[in-house]
Amino acid sequence: MNVKNVYILDDRAILYVNGEDAKEFLQNLISNNINKVTDANSCFTSLLSPQGKFLYEFFIIKHKSGYIIDCEKPQVDGLFKQLSIYKLRSKVEILNLSNEFVVAAFSHEKFLTFDEAQDISGFTLKYREDPIFLDPRHKKLGARLIINLEKLYLSLKKLGLKDSKLKDYYSFSHKLGIVPKDLNKLQNKLFGIECNYEELNGIDFKKGCYVGQENTARIKLKNKLSKRLLPINTIQGELTEGESIYYNEKEIGKVLIEKDYPFALIKYRDLNLSVNDNFNTKDASIKIEKPDWIKS
Image (cartoon, rainbow, N blue to C red):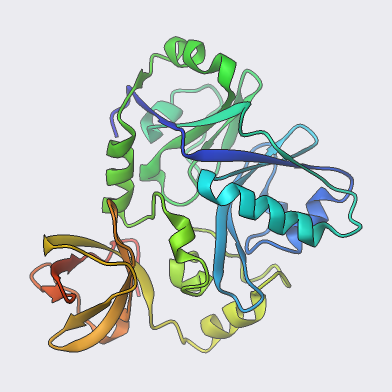
């Protein structure tokens, strides 16, 4: 990621959770620990189904008296509705501020030029009043700035950042092995832990109860994690969402995201993935890439 480039993530949406019970409310729902979220630290997390299946993923940033949620725009309405269902009698206000704020991403190296910046995953500081934080998933994804839309371009000019093609950021994320978009295609198709949330700092196994915690903990403690969400690349042909992937005529996975930046759920324990291995679907020949940050 070039130190002078900035990527306007216009596919992101912003919710704001505020109120007397906001902290406890989020703690009882999310897979990560809300106590990690302070003025100096933000977190990556998820909201799972009661069965531990993937529903939503997002970042949480402390801002003023409440919490900013940075999520994918196609997921925002569903996430807003789900949070509202869980609200019950909690003293919590949930606002959709997507028309007022925008998210921009820039390099890890640029972040470290800010006064008070620290090279710590999730580290958060303020640029004037707006939060900037190092992406908690992987430092190569750089930093994220959440800023009022009216101030965006003037601020980027003062920071010496040049607007760059969003598809380059997506491609970089896909190559790194982290899903950049189309998260709705994953809903209820795999367990949250199969999304590599442990490696991406999205799960805290010590925090106690949250929605989907029981199955997530069982898979972890019994060493039952046999499938993972992995990036795939098409050599030839076309992919279809939901189709099977084969290796030596044995089914080893399914395509979950088929377009642009494809991902598949792969039975990785059965494979010694090699860059020289070719896999296939009914109509395509593909490569499967296991990111180097996945150690097991």
